[in-house]
Image (cartoon, rainbow, N blue to C red; front, top):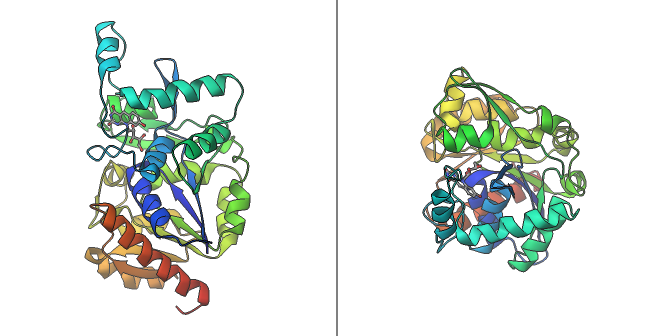
Length: 316
Ligand code: FO1
């Protein structure tokens, strides 16, 4: 089976890792990753979601934070702090190597997708990881309290505290999809929208021209809700829904993807929404969607893949 996953952030990285561990020989996995969070820090190009996904796939991720590298040290950060550099965004020593080398290659004219493919092979990742675009597509967060903010200023420096009134995805709307993205969607048997933030992780991917129409044409797209019992497993998704005037929960997530969704994987704590999903023409699959460790990633991924096989056979 050819599987395409759309991912961003820690939840997306966990499920992408589960899918990579579960897929059998002969199966193919492509992960298309949000680059709306990318920015420049210390003169380096930082692509947090690409790195979070790649480090998870390579088994290199920091188990405490979900982002950054395992067994990290922070000598450079400490020295930068002494010199008066901005220290609100923490780049560890091991992680820094990724940023130094990626920035060097981008400056020498390589595309982000080429650099990513090369890093994936260096890290022993055997599925395909594609940035949504090779063009810059920074997400801007429109807030009530602090005006329009670059994503990481909102997310890390201001700890998601300002109240959100909207998102400016105009850069993503003008970006071209990275080479291979649209073809990978068309060729996939199933598309899985990972349990990532619909507004700032999946929203920017959907804003890239061609991606939403490709999903609408696809016919077998399943999304995993990032909210369990109205609460985000990690991050500000529930807070964003509330501030934008939606009751955070399964139905609000479904609303974001309603245009193209065939099925939705929801947690057993949200079982009561199964009927409403069915009424919307979305096939619900109920399971434990919480991924506390590597085994749970594998367990959830294999359940989702079995469910998708049934969808493909028309057995549901
Ligand atoms: N998130 C934080 O909350 N604080 C940080 O200092 C931080 C540093 C960081 C460095 C590299 C990286 O790849 C990710 C990092 N993140 C940090 C996570 C990142 O800001 C967010 O998880 C994503 O952008 C949202 O998906």
